[in-house]
Image (cartoon, rainbow, N blue to C red; front, side):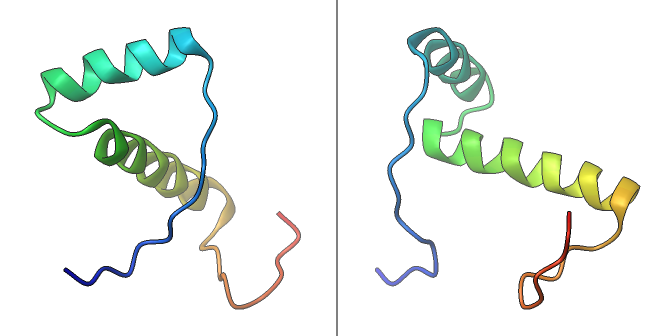
Length: 61
């Protein structure tokens, strides 16, 4: 199964990991998908306040 997703290591405090796991379970998502969802939500909020981020250009954010 091909995917366009990058793989990387993420280290979390145990407490945060466990809390995200609870949220993921309630939302019927995997932990990875819950983290991705949370990141997407934060990016959306940031862009509403700061403007659209262009990954192709090096913005001073």
